[in-house]
Length: 305
Image (cartoon, rainbow, N blue to C red; front, side, top):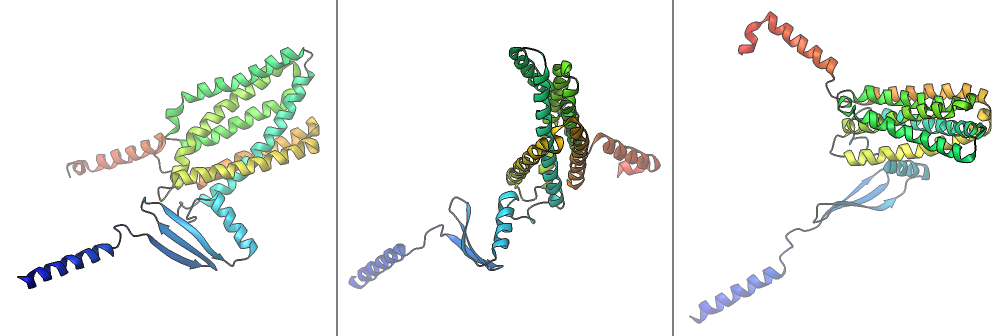
């Protein structure tokens, strides 16, 4: 009896000691990766988040700068986390925003010249400027009604958006040539730009979605906007330089403006060629249905199988 009691006590003591040293249910999972003279430690947290800590980096300054640029302006895991063609798309997207921002500076300068040349009181000039901006909202409202048509043709609408934007910018650049029609010309230009803004924003999601391979759409979107912001700032700087030198006269604007516009539209066309959008537009759907009906007509029994 005493022996059985002692054995039972020993077993309970052993179980309690094992319980004390029992490992936690969810031990931290981490590992260290060493590549290209860089040592990183990755760790999975209990909430499912993955963190990375840089342990050692013996690369050159240029190599580290390039890597820092890629981490800030390209999705995590690039180039393996995106579809083929993303780099080309990004290159021309940067050129597109650079030329667009440069054109906007030139058009704003022309609008100010046109507004200042009007022989009207300051109050009337301010009202004209407000009405000019109001036309952009009208353009946005009209284009928003066409949103359903943009799903099947995102590339075509994206190109059309930038053509409309350049058309509106061109009208603004030409506004000093007819200061007595400032409100009409600038208002029509802003109307076209308003439609362009809606079309560009509406087609942005399907284009970004075509590049997402690992459920990283948000990361793609954020890094794409970072690229746009960076080159918009560069473009504004280029525009200020041109406005104060070559384009200080209307003759200079008439030469530089079309060149920037052609570069702008060309960049968008190349962007769309690089984007692997896999949607059926009405024309492709009609071709597929026509081919199917042709095959069905030649082989009527195929439907039965």
